[in-house]
Length: 595
Image (cartoon, rainbow, N blue to C red; front, side):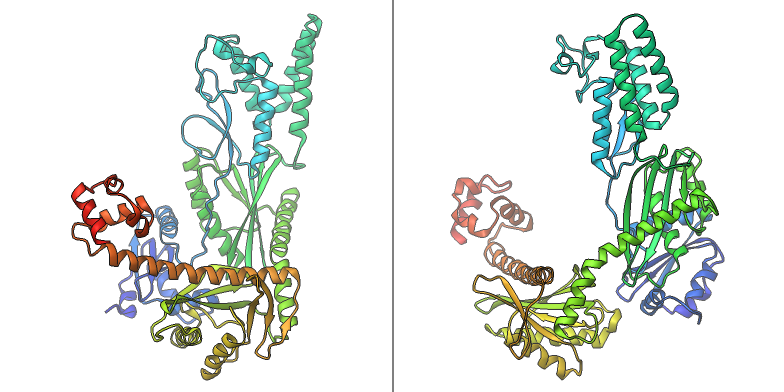
């Protein structure tokens, strides 16, 4: 038996990470500490804590810890464990975006320029990230058009130049029509453009243009002139005034009652390459400094390439260690800066304002839908949490139900719950619905708001009419709760047409609200049917294949994978069944006889 008070006494006064677990041994929080003894004990002292941390503490059943040599090791281990376990009470960067970069294999004799989403330590040069892949493609197309570098993916010497050479889109290095030195000069010019070092390049090109003109090589002079104009146009776009640094990420944060938005603006060579937005729920009570600290650690320690400078509104925890780790990881000096005045402060303010606008726009339409729902149904509170239920069966067999949740106007599929009906025999949708609602209420009574089902909803939308509404209301009243219940009814074409109350009154709503209701109804319907099919297919597979001697789990899976279903196996010929790995003629004949 784990005794928290006794285990707290054993904590060492050393740096390390601690892992909080619930009664099911699930990791719910991972943290880092300079002193494990002081940090872990602080959670169990009486002090003011955020609601998120209070909820986390209430679920702690036991904890583990790992001692390390220094803070840097603790920081790395913390980030790795957060990424591995994705604990529900950590600030989680749930992001699988891979941004496009422009890559030049400078080690090749005749390098190509192309877009990649994989940044490797291979000696190549990478430029980016470009959050807009179209912008990256436009830049690569511009480079290929104006510098006539090779277009082919795989370079090899040829006996005849390809069409790109004929239409003057390539200098045909495959035919050695251009020397490695001259080609390398073109590549160096491209690198200067991508690096933002165009002043020297333009000066040199102007000199070459004049020389060509003096030699009456007017075609070459015109080619260089067009290149100069194109470079001037492409490098003028998206300049950020008065910033001398070449590689900066500027981070801003904004909050509302529902979510936190962090925006990262990517500035490279005084150009705004793009921006990305990241959203975190249930953090409105958290300190901005703490949120930014967790974000920066996860975001940059998990990234292959980092900028020279990261600019924030305020200092973050572990700033010095993080700078050291990132500098070592990227083989260059990386600074985390908190500007106090001037253009850089105004840039952070601009990013923060954009984060606020992004957040407002994200929720404006959703909240408008909820406001309309509140107004139309004359609800006391804004229905921030809505639940809906549906029943699925075939002739009273494989009885199941599903619950789906919409939170703040957004359908959260990860909060869906599935029920295998236990107390009902035969086809009785009312009894199935009532069992489902009873079990939902019991979960709340047992586990409260911190349980897997969360708090009770502000509104229930039943997938059906009066019968289902009354069935749900009866159970809610029996348990002493007061939750509004309305039905989502469909027309003859099985299309959602209206909301309805227990008095058969229908409510006309806007197109946007109707689209939301339709999607909600379709989601719970598909969830219930999906679960029903899963149980049914599992039972069919089990009853018809598992009884055949010689068919184990491996062969069963191979048969189902090959044919798709038991029904298709029944239709197959013996020779076709023998095509499955491990099935000989004798076993194939046995399968045909017994299913």
